[in-house]
Length: 118
Image 1 (cartoon, rainbow, N blue to C red):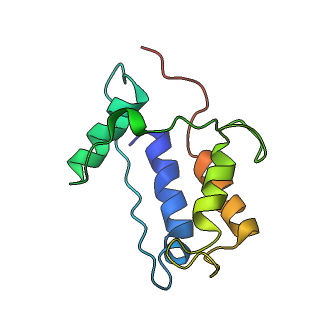
Image 2 (image 1 turned 30 degrees about the horizontal axis):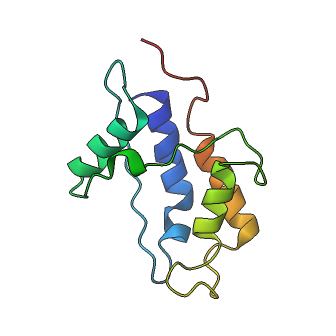
């Protein structure tokens, strides 16, 4: 198992119960990339279609994992927006802003920030 997949397993163990509490169901999946890994959207489509979901091609958004929450294309801001409040009942809290940011930091720390090289 790669170090990244081991970190994802640890993240899943730490956050799964909290993410799936109440009416939510979060699925965390990961697997090794092909070498060379190719375009991010192709990698994402290969993963989601293998899980039975629809490919979305160029609609995958490449977020900046290094950007601060108020920066453009910030992965942290996207994760906080997605997990702070329930998706269907947006006025209802899910993780709350502080815990959503903490969860996002933990998730982003699972990945090597350096681009994959062949």
